[in-house]
Image (tube, rainbow, N blue to C red):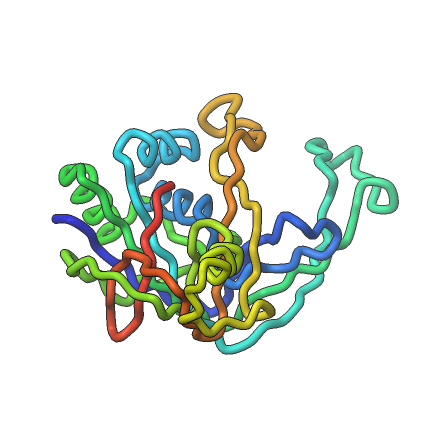
Length: 243
């Protein structure tokens, strides 16, 4: 086995944009750390074990997704008071707004040269150890299908996907050399510096960000002036990138 794609559907999903604090705005696709977390839940691994699994076996992933709408929900929470007898709602409580994607569909691609690790992950998605969620514990995910060993290809037309790096900057850099074979709208592409790795106190302990990388979230279809490798599934192109 060289690769496989998991087709996931859910009623709600929310992936916190790290640039927002009091308002938890959602990214429109699950970021790489969320994919590592979902895979870890399927494998029955702790967050640290899941991260080590991807580090040890040189995985590439791809993310494609759509949704039918958005909404906001109000959450009230306490700020870390463990002994509820000491809880004071006026001092220890806070309210935030969370943005949710409604009726989402995601295609998550996994590729690795380590066939045994890839088969282990594929088996885990067939029979997950823990329930799979999309960003929140109440956003349960349903696996619609799993497709294996798709042919790797390349494309210069992208939509509804993550691409590693700053795509608009890369396109314009090539345009400066005379390669004008592209059609993009910068307001349909957002570039984010997202967490990629964490340092953990222990398997389930506190974590701090240890590595950040740049990703472009592609919305409406665009044509770029270079080729990107990925997989085709149900007439959708899913770019692959290393994590």
